[in-house]
Length: 104
Image (cartoon, rainbow, N blue to C red; front, side, top):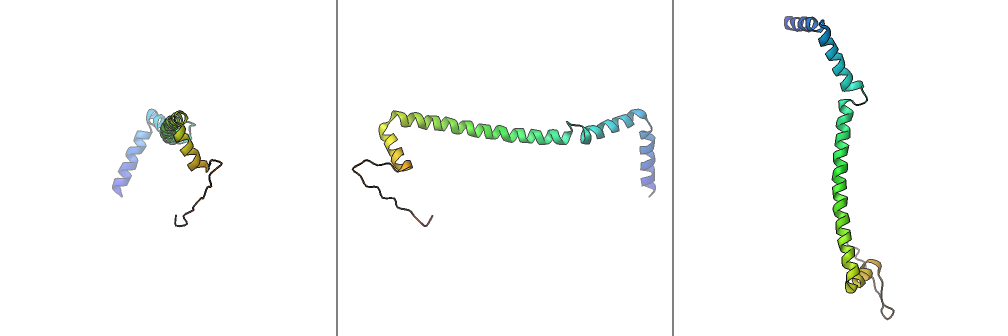
């Protein structure tokens, strides 16, 4: 108990100094009450990092899609294969049977 009283008395003596008191008030204000407080800044930085990662992911996907598109438009056999597999297109003289696997 004596140690606690000593500690509190030291804090009181330090807090009596106007500069220390001003610093403490300023820090409390900046930590919790200001519009650009540290908590909000941390959250916004975290969100920014996540959005930058998403941007990288989508840019890579765009590059892959552009590559596939160029490939499809330059190769008619590949374009026909893509149309048959993706959109179930067929020639007029063909019959198309779709087999569905129920185990998946």
